[in-house]
Length: 271
Image (cartoon, rainbow, N blue to C red; front, side, top):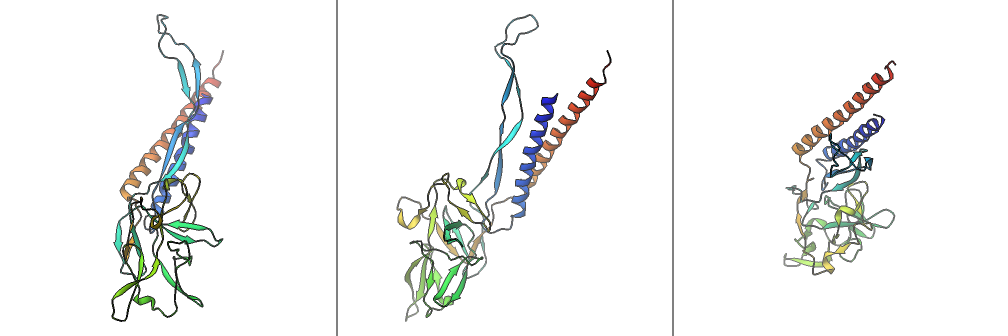
């Protein structure tokens, strides 16, 4: 019975983490480029009660007697399915159709990756820099910040589906200016480390960043200017998952209550 107390407690702890994950998904349902997370579980060790079991006639059964010792969370994985692409009309709003990520320069000089494409122009002394919503410079295909000449008017710039920045010439026709927004892919995006502001960073599990412009074998992503990618969280699915997690938590609590009642009865026995 003490074993059942610990087993029920492990189920409650695991389901609490599950509820926390679902709550985070629902909280980010309107976060641009957010990717839903799912809690995964695995069973704990099994205790062997009997190596050999027999039936009522003493005949040996083909199975032994083992008792499981509960459950634990094995991982919380992000699901990188495509979110809905919504039109905003913003000049510096971009949605990625495909497997790519934007690359941004972090405050410590490292590189972060994001699917959130609500960018803006930051005007400085050296020119105009394309930045994310937190002011981090967006990187080009060479891994350098995208800084435009001060003589260019940002309102006249356009971006094609390949991420190339275009500026009208003397005749008014848009021409490439030799700068392209960098997009990267990962062999295992689920292995990326999550940090704040919808930023991911590479890890040994994700593999190194693969720049789409430099690897012809990669299927190229497309950029949609004037659009942003919504989160891929489905409210109905998350509410169903929340109910399931709540019921599982409740059942594990009833296991603990039943075990406690049985222990109380055992303690009250009289010889």
